[in-house]
Length: 139
Image (cartoon, rainbow, N blue to C red; front, side, top):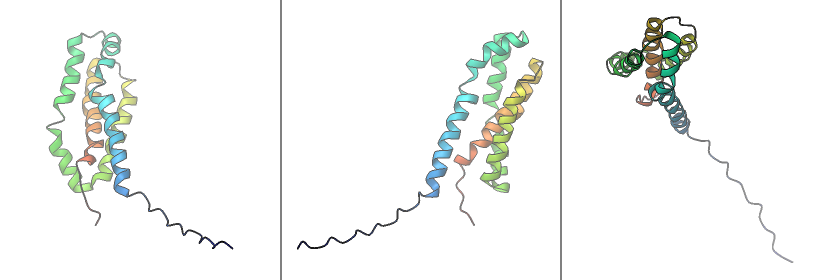
């Protein structure tokens, strides 16, 4: 008679570390932000120029200002992170950026497009990816 094999005891798999979910989410949001807000402006130049009858320089100036404003508003973003924490800042920024993109379709002038893009879309996009820089322990 052959010896009986013991039923192997399966060790339960440990759950995926919560931090890895944050890394994955951060990478996804960062790539979406970089694609749509930072690197995607050449796709928008021709339609914006034709819709508003503006020059390439005027449209490019709006996108250049959007990149330049990220630095100075970083101070405000740091204060928001300290005061409300990364989770709230992330959600507010994502809602600002998403609703701003939706509202861009309803603008009727280049001036309104520029203000909406600078004050809502870009600021919201910057806030929604700031949590990547915020390392905070749950207390």
